Length: 115
Length: 117
Image 1 (cartoon, chains in turn orange, blue):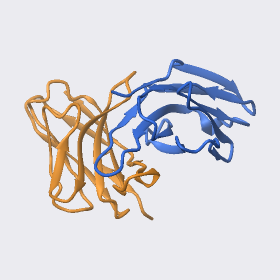
Image 2 (cartoon, helix red, strand yellow; image 1 turned 90 degrees about the vertical axis):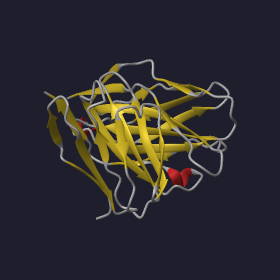
Image 3 (spheres, one colour; image 1 turned 180 degrees about the vertical axis):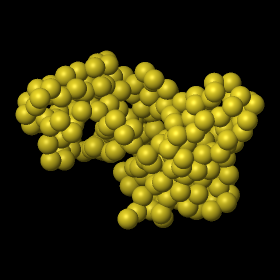
Image 4 (cartoon, helix red, strand yellow; image 1 turned 135 degrees about the horizontal axis):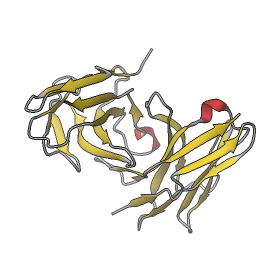
């Protein structure tokens, strides 16, 4: 089955640690995205990548880093510089073409809690 | 910048009844796309329905339909014959229709729908 997987489902981090969230897709999509979701808020874009080996900052990139070495994978690292990292993180992908075909599809998410 | 407003933080509906969720948006563009996503308790975002602004006909997907009023910048979601599985958070989203390059998707803050048996 084609889809987007995220791991782990739950992640606990001690203050001062970096952690990496995994996102993999087998939809053959060119574009991938990372969003953060906090209670009572919509989704906020952290980073996006339209093609392998290229990515751009979103609205709230500070304290986060990404890589895009493979088309299928777009891992997100939450660094110790992120002051309030406890949140739900959603990865998405899309074909990357203009128009309705560029609809974003989402993975199941990772809940990150800082202890 | 585009904004998306969902003015109903929570709504409830009796099972088998019809409910309408509201969404308004602000844009100066004429070409854009609108989406409704559902986020059930599992928290995975699921695409419910999408609308292209240049199409006058309202999109329909089984029990889900939209009322797209372009002049009023309104994009409401109607759920007919509500089922218990429809209980979820619903997000309205906007994306510019500019061709080429990345076009940001702007999400509303969501409406939590409760379905009463």
